[in-house]
Each structure stands twice: as C-alpha cells, then as structure tokens.
Length: 507
Image 1 (cartoon, rainbow, N blue to C red):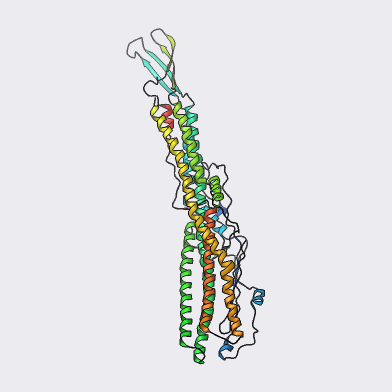
Image 2 (cartoon, rainbow, N blue to C red; image 1 turned 90 degrees about the vertical axis):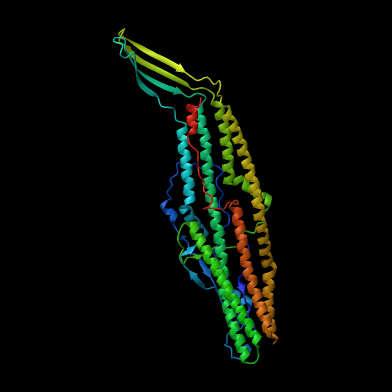
C-alpha cells in the first residue's frame, strides 16, 4: 500500500508554517466477485430485509488533523514569543489530536448497503426475474381435459342417444419440457442481469464516493492553507508599514489568498454535488452532516490490460447474461424441431341408446398430418436467433476490450502521476521550503520567493489529491468490471407464454 506522508509546511523566517495530515480508515477498492453460478431470483422477495437499512457502521472512524504554527513576527521587528523553532522531524513526532470523532460518519460499505436495499432498478430487475419464473411454470402446463355431454338424433322419438364424454390432448415430442427449458434460460438471463444491475450500482457509488472524498480532502487542505495565506497578508502589510517590505509583496499575498478562496469554493461545489449524487444513488434525500471516511490510496499492484480483460470476461455478469441468451436460442432450435411432431387428441364417451335400450361407448383418436406446415419458418427463425445471440456475445467482448482500453489509459495516467508526485514532486516541493528555512537562517529574505515556494507546495499537494481520486476511480471501474449506470440501465423481460400456445396448436 502506498503510505501518504502528512503535508508539512516547514517553518520559514517570515511566514507562518503548519503541518497538515489526514489519516482515514482504510477502504478496499476491490469487491467480492459475483458467484459464477447464477442464483435464481425468480421467487426472491422484492422487499429488502429490515436490517439492510443500517446506516452507521459499528466502528467509529475519525479524521485527525494537526496544526503547528511558529510566530514569525520577529522577522519584521516585533518581539516574538518564546516558542522554540520546531524541525520537520519534531513536527512529525508531535501527538496528533483528534479534531473530529463521531459515529455519524459515512463509509463506502455503509453507502453501498444502503443503495442496494433502496435501488429501484434492482427491484425492477428482481420483478422481471420473477415474471420470467412465472412464465417458465406456465409454458410447461399440460392442457386441461374437456368434459361434455352429447345428444344424437334428438327429436326422433325412441331413437335418441345420449352420452357423456371426455377429451384430452396428448402433447408429443416433449414440447412442454422443451418450452420450460427455453424459458429456464430466460430466467437465468434475468438473474445475471440482476447481478449486473447490482454491479453497476456499486461502481456508480464508488465513483461518486471517491470524487466526494477527494473534494473533501482538497477542501480540508485549502482551508488549512488559507490560514497561512491570510497570515501572509498580515505579515506583508506589517512589513510594508515597517519599511522593510513593498506594496507588490502585499498585492502578491492578496492574490494568493484570493486564489485559495477560489480553490475552497470550487472544492465546496464539487463536494456538495458529489454528496448529492451519492445520496441519489443511495435512495435518500440527504446524508446530513455525516462526514466521509475512506482512503484514496490504492493497492500498489500494477494492472495488466490482458489480465484485466481475462478477469472481466470470466466474471462479468453482463457477458454471462449474453451467454445465457445463446443457450436459450440453442434450446429454442431444438424446441422448434419438435413442433412438427403432431399431438394426439383422444375422445372417450359413454352413453345410452333409447332405441335399443343398451349402453354404448365412443372412442376417437385424431392427429394432424404435417404435410403443408412443418414449422419450417420457425425453425429458420430459431437458427437466425441463435446466430444473432452468438454474435451478441462477441459484440460484448469487443465492447469490453474497447472500454478497457479507455479505462486502462486513465488508470495508467493517474498511476504514473501519483507515483511522480510521491517519488519526485512532493519531496522537491518540501525541499524548496526547507531551503527557505536555510535562507532565513542565513539572514537573507525574498518575500516573492517565499510566496512562490509556498504556493508550489500547496499546488503540488492539491494536484496529488486530485490524482489519487482519479486513480481510485479508475480502480473502481476495473474492479466493477467496467459496469456503470445503476439507475439508467434497467433489466426488463418481455417474454410471454406463446410457446405453450404453439405446443398445443399451430399444427
């Protein structure tokens, strides 16, 4: 795991210095993959469990911030306090006070559970699966027997014949069993689409969570840096009054302060929008004052495009749903081949003949001859459906590779950026501040150089947080099998029981 070094502002001769660090509860970017065997949701209850709405995690997380300031009034001729100058190592060794600690916090896992229990798209997918399950039962039902009364030669005195009869159609060729097997693949498809919808939602949640978390960290960083920028304005104004500074120094300090104010405003807008997006995905109006607790740092594992592609193809529920449609089309080919096997209609009756005074029985068997209609059109259509389904699988595989190429590009760019900041840019920015300390000790001072070094350090840390957020989002897409659209993509089922009607008629 990458270890995020706390931000340190080394004590300078004429500017306040502080150290900021954030330590958050570690969050795993990878979710447990869906089971390769589809779970039948056709009879699943559409009501979430009562305990699924649990919002607050059992464990209390905290966000810790430490700040340390050195009064630089001595640099402008004002008596300083007796606080000794602290070194960066001493600042790191200081105990970190807990600034915020509350059970009212938001973790990624808590939001995911809330969203999974509230998401209407998942409930729609479950309902569609249940509908397919009902149709699966219907298409396998045998035809009902027919019971009736028959009267013959009625009105011809003394020759009337009356009988009771029962008729039953015997479905041959295992057509009803094939019906159920075809729709069983529909149920399997819908079950995989339920899992797809869940994966889409979780990916959306992660993307919004990491965007909000990065904005929250940038907001904390900007607000803390604003204290330094504000005190820099005070110092530059005091230096001007003491005739040791110039008006351009004051203006540069004011510009820096206004830029930090703008950064704070932008981070607030992004943070607010991301929280609202999270709330919408979770199915709640608002999260209230709860604070996001998580970690932007990702596992230090290099991802490979081919390895990721193989993993996605092996575990993608969307691809599994497409393969289930291929199985469905294959079964439908066999089903249509069985259609020309004619059903047998049986008739059995018992009656009384008034002319002879005796009882009689009627037995009748009939079946259509497949001379003109051999179901040849439906068989061709079934073969075409199979070809279409197989090509759809290939289309999805190609689409996965295309989307993977784009996400891998984002991942590689963000990963390279994070590594560059961690290994080079942040250490150099910190070294620049330490050189300012050495300049102060040597009695040399250039206020504009101090402003430049200070702003460079702030910008580097801000961009580092942005890069961490982008890397976390890229990892979330890869771990989410490139599936997004938890509310925009809804699984539906438009099948019916027409196969049963075809099995009983359509001769």
